Length: 146
Image (cartoon, rainbow, N blue to C red; front, side, top):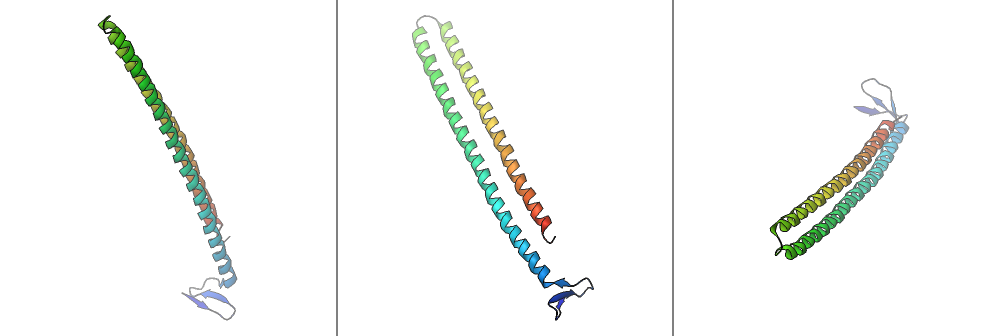
């Protein structure tokens, strides 16, 4: 409990040092300023995180389209070759299908590697942005009242 004295300071009822109104106002001002700075930092970090998510999604979508194009091309090539080789031999047809499967497997592997790489890069950037926010908030909280 705090009681107000005539000299515009407040005195703690537990016998500790008086609390100056000026000091309390200064601390409140610092706290509000830190809160505004923290909010500003949070907005900036949120924008960076949103940007990374958008970039990652865009890259994954682009890579997915490239994969689709490769697979379509491989299927068309294999189908054309098989149509020409149906009359010649079944061994050629099997080889064409094996080539199609190999091309598809490589394309999916490449796609998975690219998407994983993009996701890993985005995760590092997002983690760094959130760590920056955490560090700045900690510094602001530590500076209040000093």
